[in-house]
Image (cartoon, rainbow over all chains, first blue to last red; front, side, top):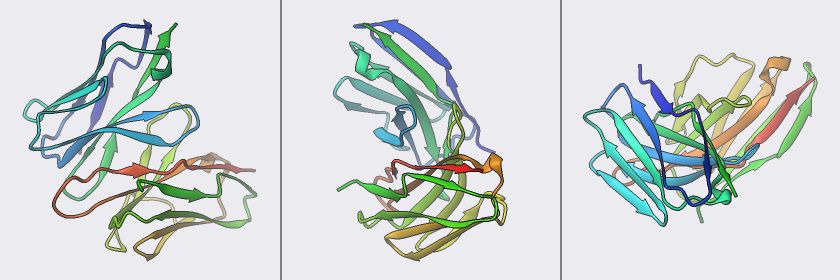
Amino acid sequence: KQEVTQIPAALSVPEGENLVLNCSFTDSAIYNLQWFRQDPGKGLTSLLLIQSSQREQTSGRLNASLDKSSGRSTLYIAASQPGDSATYLCAVMDSSYKLIFGSGTRLLVRP
Amino acid sequence: DTEVTQTPKHLVMGMTNKKSLKCEQHMGHRAMYWYKQKAKKPPELMFVYSYEKLSINESVPSRFSPECPNSSLLNLHLHALQPEDSALYLCASSPRGEGPTEAFFGQGTRLTVV
């Protein structure tokens, strides 16, 4: 059974810092990996999608990497801003289109 | 348009009520999902529909009954719920087949069972 783990569970950083969020998964037979952002009480916003054949994706200050063989992904946020404060979730999709989430990292960027 | 629309945004229902949650997307996605999310927890998969057919049921109690009337709509019918069913219910959709399978989520329905 696929298990997805995210570390750290929570992170507090001063504005301007570069930071890395980690995601690991137990079954490497994934179709893709997706990073989401969730603000309190809201839905999920898709940040980056990495297909299983890809190694990384970039969008603005965000960069996500995927190492399928080792079951790991990282989300790199450059020059963090208070508006980046949210919960970040990674999710893996398997061949049956099941999307399984990690427990998330709660990020606070202090002004 | 990458929007998934869920209605209602908030719902309060008694344990003997029957209500329905609605989800709509017009992206041509042929996979649609229902998730349940409790406070400070990640979303938990409930159901997956693929080409309008139920493909995955994660052992969800029968008081939750999904329905996919067409490729754009997904409903979740609720009956005889318990207070512990109070949660944020999220709908999502994604493409099927070849190519990127990016999933998009709605803003959710906040359900309170009293």
